[in-house]
Every structure is written in structure tokens, then in C-alpha cells.
Length: 279
Ligand code: ATR
Image (cartoon, rainbow, N blue to C red; front, side, top):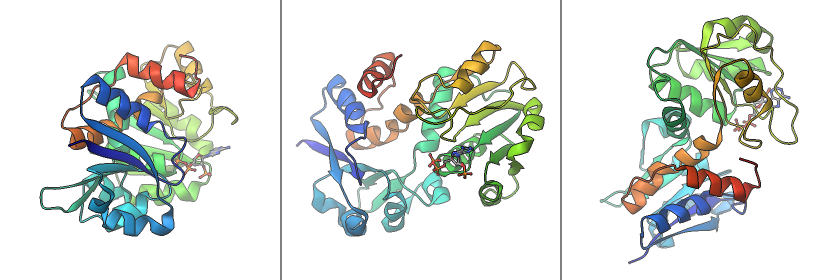
């Protein structure tokens, strides 16, 4: 029987998930489909609660439904619990609705693939931004044993609120103090929208940053953001944000279709071409 999975949310028209899962289904010769299903927030609770009725074996959840999905799940993994948001759902053998949040796993998977050994002698990390993506990344870094994790955000209170969720393992920093903290960090992560096409660049002076620090950006359009270009030019290792998007899809595919897929160069090229981004 054909196994069906889908991206659910509202809207889902721009999601690249069907392309990614479609590539893996074809590559592995699996009798399965991955569809787009628009689920408006008003009907989200009923949809996820009565999940089996939709004929899906599982689904991804995107905005604005991730928090609603987490609420209706019978079981959540540690990340989804910490986030209060789920992006990957499935039914277990007893028919219980299970949810995971794979954004943090995607972030770590990308660094593991592109900068192997990055976590072997970790120093402090500095995460710029305090939105939803930052929350997943701070959680992921702490779960990997990286400490301390500093969070700097334009609106400082949001950095403080986020740091408070992690009880002492992460610390908030004012945006003006980024420069003085840089010399102490071995990992710099941009989770703000600065540097994205159509947005102003993230302008920070990287001079104090050790040249063996790793710099990564969750923005992937353009693939090399001004931050990554500046870091690379001074000798830092850099990792772009596309891999996070691809790696966060791995756990769902494995769960629904029984094969752990790989993030290959071919898949990266396929998604870049679809996004119209120069490799
Ligand atoms: P996401 O879910 O992708 O993290 P978000 O929740 O909208 O998106 O968060 C966007 C982040 O980019 C926030 O940290 C935001 O800072 P504020 O909390 O101060 O709004 C940050 N950001 C957006 N524009 C910015 C700018 N011009 N300068 C600095 N930070 C900016």
C-alpha cells in the first residue's frame, strides 16, 4: 500500500519539502508520496487529533500550526517539549500521535556533515537572534554539551526570556556587546533575518573573532551571506544554512518510510536550482 506523508500548514505553496522527500522516495524506489496539504489554523486541532482519518502515515507541520500540533500530540520528544512546537508527526504502533521538533537536529546534522569535529573541543557559542529558529538552535547546542551559549538580540528582553528558558546554561547579551564577546567564542551563529535577500546585511566587525572559530548562518538565500563571505575572507571556516533545511527533513522520512536518507550534493543542487539560488 502506498505510504502517504505531507507538509501541512498554511500556506504550504512555497515549501520545498515535497521536492526533498520526492527526491529521496525516487532514489530509494519507495512506494510512497509526499504531498502539500493546506491546513488553516482554525481546523488544525481537529485535523491533527483525527490524524488517521487523513490517510497519512505522518506529516511535517509548518507555520502557523507547530504549537497547535505539539498541544494535541500524546507524546513529544525532548526537543518538541522544550520548544512547545512540533514539526514532525507520526502514529506509533498503539495509534498514539507522536511529535518531534527536528530543527535543532537539522542544525547539528548540517555542522556534523560540513564541519566534522566542530564539537570536539568546543568553547563558547554566540547565537545572534532570539526568534523561533534561535530557540531550536540554542536547545540543540546545549543538548550537544556546548556551554555557555550566549544569545544577543536587537530586542534584549527577548534574549533574556530565551536564556531564562535554559536555566543558567545560556546567557543573554546586549546587541551592543557582541564585539566584546567575539574574542571568547569558537562558534558564531546568525539566526536573524539580516543578510537575507532583500534585507540589510548583518554588520558586525569580526576582527576580535579567533580565526579558528566556526561561523554559520541559517539564511540560505543567498547561499553565501555577507557575514559568511567576511568570515571566509579572514580565514574562518564557514557553513551555509541550506543544510539545516535539508537535514531537518531526515528524521521524518526515516520514521515514515523506514530508510534513513542522506543529504547529498545532488540534493543540494536540486533545491538550489528550484530556489533560483546560485550555487
Ligand atoms: P525565526 O523564527 O526565523 O527566528 P523571527 O521569530 O521573526 O524568525 O525572528 C527574527 C529574528 O531576527 C529576531 O531575533 C529579530 O530581532 P528582534 O527580536 O529584535 O525583532 C531579528 N532581526 C530582524 N531584523 C533585524 C534587524 N534589522 N537588526 C537586528 N535583528 C533583527
